[in-house]
Length: 134
Image (cartoon, rainbow, N blue to C red; front, side, top):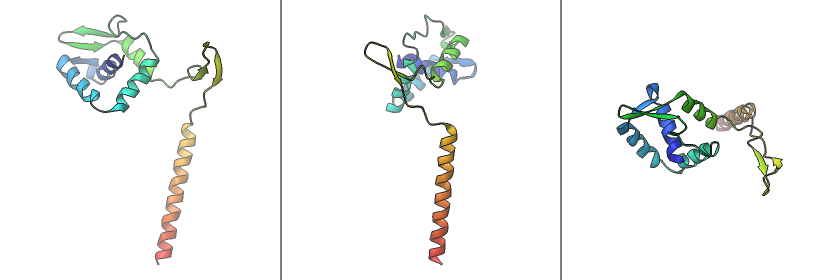
């Protein structure tokens, strides 16, 4: 599964979505050794499409010594990377019935507000330090 998600991510980064096998192997080796973050990310993405098979589903085609991502492959990758909906975040019980929604993700506006408040607090602290030093 991680392999297939990685292939989609690599191919989408190339012009026209085509990469020769040597480039694919090099990029795969780089990502495979980049740490647990990449592995966890590909597992999370792959969980959105559990029956992913890039070749039999027509997401990737073999062409002239390399592989190319198809429009369908781009669409599936966009779906995997899309922000989860409320339906995706519902916690399920053992008998697969919805129990309760997961806590909502923080909104971007909230994040920007907190960032602005931190900046203002740092600025005020610097000014107090300057005033105390003089």
